[in-house]
Image 1 (cartoon, rainbow, N blue to C red):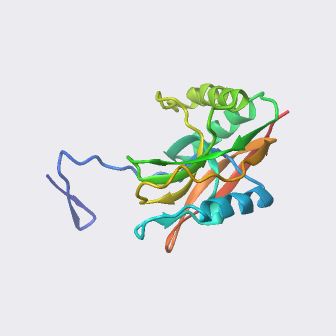
Image 2 (tube, rainbow, N blue to C red):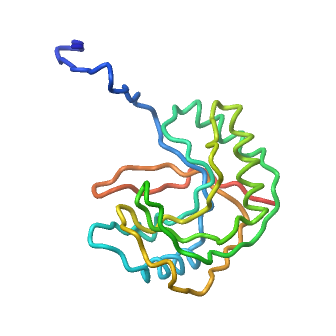
Length: 193
C-alpha cells in the first residue's frame, strides 16, 4: 500500500504495525539514592560479561514496578493522579542474587524471593493505573535491576554481599533518547508512609 502525505510517499505493508508518535515513554520504578546506586553499579561491574554485552550506565540503574510505554500528555496526567492514590508503607529488602534472562538477553541483580511489601506495592499501583487504560502484565512479577543488555549467560554462582534497599517511595520515570542510548528523568516522586 502506498500513501501520499504532503509530497512524501510512505510505503506501508499491511503486516507492519503503525507505531503512533506519542508525547512520552514512561515507567514506574524504585529509584535508588546515590549511595545505593553506587553500590549497585559496583556489584554490576563485578559480573563477567561477553564482549557484545552493553552495561547499563550507573545513572540509569533502577527497579521497574510497571513499564507503561508511549503515552500522550493527558494519559500521563491520569497516571500521575492514580499513582498519588497508592497507600503503601515504607519497607526494606535485599538485592541478593544475580541472574540472566535469555529472551531479552539481559543480566540482572535481584532478590531471591519477592518481598511481600514490594509485591503489594506492585499490585496496588497496577490496580490504580488500570483506570487510565493501563493493563498490567499477567506473568508473575520478578523484580530486578537490569545491569547489562545484549548479554550472554552469566555465572550466577558468584556470591556478593547483599545490598539493603530501604524504600521510602517510588517514581514515574521518562525515557529520553540521547546520542548513544537513553537517559532517565524523574517526572514525579511518590512517598510511602
